[in-house]
Image (tube, rainbow, N blue to C red):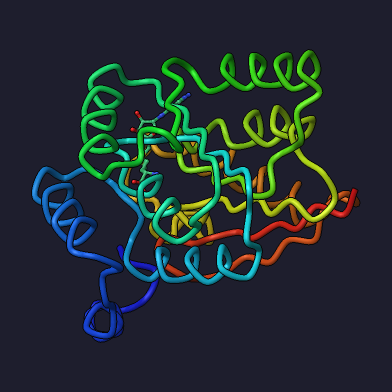
Length: 222
Ligand code: SAM
C-alpha cells in the first residue's frame, strides 16, 4: 500500500523535476532494477532540507547504488559525504556510479554492517578530534533504526539534522490493518518503538511526515 493514494502519488510525480541528467538516468536504472532508492517526493524534501542546513559533513546509512549520496553531493557543493553499505555487490555498483558522477573525492563508502562502521567512525572522530556531522540520513534495515540512532549520537552536535526514511513502512507502522504479512510484524513493532522514542526524547525535536514512505525529521537539541 502507498501511504497516499496512487492518484496523488502520480500527480506529485508529474511535478517532480530531476536535478540533472546523470541522476535522471541513474534513477531510471535503479527503478528498472527494483533498487529501493529514495522516492521522488522524499528526494525533494531532502533537497530543500539540505539547502537550508548547508551541511559540510553528511553521513548516510544505506548506500544501495549510490543514488542518494550522489544527489546529496549535487545539492551540497562543498559537503563531504560518508555512506555505509553492508552489501558488497551494492557497494561495488555504488563505487562505479560515484566515479561516473565525478564525486569520488567527496563521497566515501564504508563497506560492512553500519553498526560496526558507526563504532569505527566514533573512534576515528575521537582520535582525530574531527568535527561532528551536520546531517545524517538513516535509510537501511528498518528493524535496526534504534541501534543506528543510538550509535549516531556521539557523531552529532546541536542542530544536527537526522532524517529517517521509510518510517511509515507502507502504512504498516500506523495500523495493523495494513500488515498483510506476518513476517513484517517484528519490523513494524520495532519501527513503532523507534518512532515512540524519537518523538518523546528530550534530546531532539522530531516531526513525522507522510512524505514518500514516511520521513521523520529530527533536530538535535544538544
Ligand atoms: N539511500 C539509498 C538511496 O536512496 O539511493 C537507498 C538505500 S536502500 C533503501 C537500503 C540499503 O541499506 C541497502 O542497499 C542495504 O543493503 C543497506 N543495508 C541494510 N542493512 C544495513 C546495515 N546493517 N548496514 C549497512 N547497510 C545496510
